[in-house]
Length: 433
Ligand SMILES: *Cc1c(COP(=O)(O)O)cnc(C)c1O
Image 1: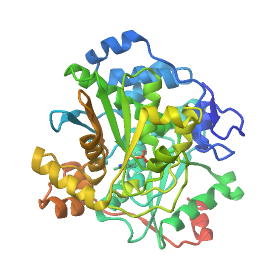
Image 2: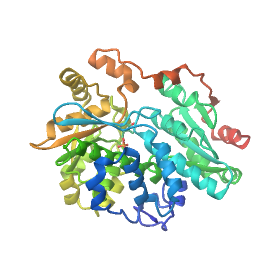
Image 3: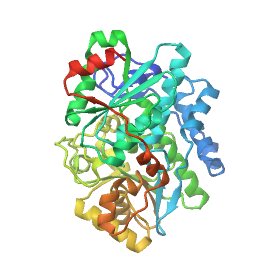
């Protein structure tokens, strides 16, 4: 399968090229040339298949031409070493819990898949070590570091701003050791990102070592997110509740919901989608006006969705040939202030005994307000509420238990390399590695 750029100015890329490059040369996002429809029999029988079996079928449609079948199966089964169950919240609303992976957030799925796919390409080529550089303000670093942990042929450098990342987040990428190096930069997130960008552009450094990124727009992180939409449908079908299913996705960069739209294009019978936003309402406004107008991001309590120029909008737009009519006929939007998010968390806990994290709360609320008669809603619970313990405890007045997995990280010993924000220092460090 070949991949084209949404800007149409770059040559077609192979899967391997698209994964290593991340972003196309013309700064567009890669799209697969074909999105294959899956056969009717697959959907007729889907409720009898496990999450891993379903995902393997979906993975074959995307990657089957480029990865040997047995190897692909191994990658899918290794990636999904944890479940993504559908849990009842009330009679018409269900939660697709995506927080049972190593770092308790949905980004684990894409990060783990990408690490294994890249590992496969490296083994095939028998090439030198590949170095992944990633700048993080918290969550991406932990998902990428844990996704790549122990994968042979790859070394990961996580750059993070000193003192600007919560203790829980920091422990998830500084205590791992092995092929993960945490670099604590004396600066802010933008400094970390600048160091990474400069490294990719430095000729001497690129001659010395093979560098790549693990950005969230990477097709190998993005496409596998389709897996759990198919599983949600299968598990709802098992319950006899899949006929008028509405999927609601708390969205920031819109990668997660776009993977669901790809599933829909492959024939997944979802009636419609809702994109739930916090106060960052760029997509919501696009739906109302047909105009896409990026803005500076606003800080909210659902901070993983604080995005003022969602990168995957380009993919949504491309998927529907730029038709506002097609987009609005399938997708609606919602936007919530911090006050409404907090009130929703309180209300859902009181009414259903279900603890939402601030991101999932946007999803739950949009269903609660937007479901029509006869529809059943599934929202994506994108992170475990304990990842936002201070916020959640403060709002619902509880002392939420920290899952063993998270507590384990906090017991580990922090190992990190102190670094200035000066590129020459960072370069010298990498050259001597
Ligand atoms: C990254 C993230 C989101 C936003 O996902 P997108 O794919 O960027 O739309 C939502 N919730 C949580 C907890 C996240 O970490």
